[in-house]
Length: 310
Ligand SMILES: [Fe+2]
Image: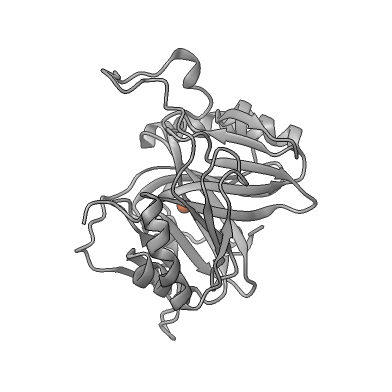
C-alpha cells in the first residue's frame, strides 16, 4: 500500500520550565524556526523542510515532559474511518473541533495503553519550505539554513507501561509494522518496541517503564552523519548538556547524538538508518547485546540513557 493512513509524527508538545532559555535552545542554537506565539504563551516551531505551519509546541510549566504527540493522517476520511476502529480497540476517543489547536483542523484524542496522550489530525495550514512548488530547486533561502540544519521532526521515543498493547494498537488499527524490538534475554519480555508506518526504521517507539506517560526523547532529522558531527561541534560550542555523544545505533542504524534542553527534556539529532519495507520481518535484539543495540560503535549501554526520562 502506498503511504496513506497515519503519515508521520506531525506535532510534539513539550513542557519547558523557562521559555527564554528554551527559545535560545530550540530556536537560536538548534535552528528551528519560531513561527508563532499564542495568547497563552505557547511557542511554535517548524524545521526548514517541513511544509506544515509547525511541528514543535513549547508550553511553560512547573515540570518538564510531554503534553501530547500528534500524527498527521492522509485526509479527513481517514480520521472518520479510524475513529470506530480505535473505539473497538477499547480506547475512549475525544473530539477536538477545528481551530481549538491553532492552524489545525479537527482532531481525535485518546490515551495510549502506555499512558501517553495521542492525537490525530488531517489538516494543518501549509506554509511551505521556501522552495515553492514550481521548479523548486534544492537550496532554500539563505536565512532558512541555520543552527543544526534540521530538516524535520523525525520521531519520538516514549516510556510507559503496557507497551505490547501499544504495539497491538499500532499494528492492528494503524497498520504499522513492528520494525525492531529489544527483548529481555531470559523472560523474552518486550523492553523497547520500534514501530514504522512508513519507510523509516521507526516513526514512534516505546520503552518499558514502571510509570506511564514518560518522555524519553524527541528526534530531529539531519541530512547526513556529517551534519550530526557538525551539530556536535555546536553542542560543544554552546555547552549544551550531552547524554551520549556522536555514535550509531544498532537499532535503526541511525547516526545519533543525545542532549538535553534547559529543562532536562532529551533531544536527539538523527541521520541515515535503513529503508524499511512492510515485507521485512521484525529485527530482534536481546539484552545480551544491549550495548550494541543502543550504541553500536562502542557497544556500551548508558545508565542515564536507560533511566533518565521526563
Ligand atoms: Fe531516537
